Length: 363
Image (tube, rainbow, N blue to C red; front, side):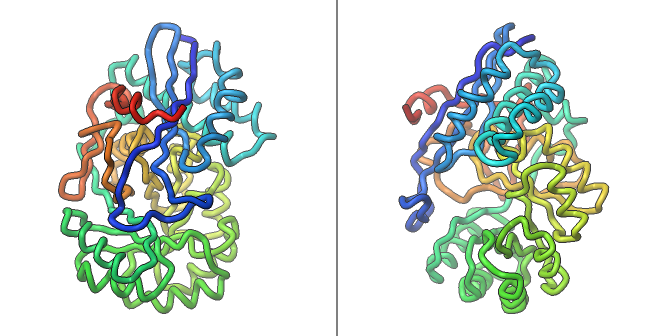
């Protein structure tokens, strides 16, 4: 089986987050998605997802101009071999960013194809489906406004979520959210890398009374593993990070620095399922928990679901708390009582809805 076509398909989906949309790149954040469609010589079509959002034009260009010319005509059955070849060929153009995001989308699509050809789900290919569903937490966008974030956190709780993450940086917001959701809903704080080590330790001390499940990415720059380790030793709160790590080797360095309690690889950024599984193996060696960064509504989310369906320990997945005006994967990614079903069909278990793709495709 050889790869005969690779196509990048950007979508811009309507969505609501129950408040003003945060700014990204000088404009309100869009619900951008970059699908990757791969077809083989025997007519099988696989779907992947490359990290999108505001960077999708660069990722699409990397896929079409760099990755596709190298991958088309190659053997698609040997996913690990092909991906290693592509990583080595393209490493001079960046070990993170659009090239790696493009490779991630291709890898996910190839796993989808492998499952479809074998008549098995991706989780079965990864060693067996150990869970029929998995818990998710509501990942809220940043609101800033104290009353608004508290109201939306309570709304998520009332929607059936048993765990909530807020992307806030203020102690007042964390205090208000904890008061709004009560003591029995778990709460995490994603800071997105704003502070010095000293500032992060100070904030950690102030939010400690609010019983955080973890404190996520408190230090700038994200690659300051030594600084992150200092915060971990001093904070008294579990530390999570990893969505900005660039490779399994980078995660190994993170673990050797003893910088995190929870590793958070992102399947659409790290190199797809193939590289993600290497991170899990490395984390297991270093006794570090893994919880994926996966605030997606496309094949990237399904890939994350299948990965953790294959792991014995039940793991909570991230789910972007937004109301979509159009859902490309329909019931496959709907949440009920804070849990997501593991698709049982071959491959990822659900292809994107062609009508949604056609309607919301960006030229």
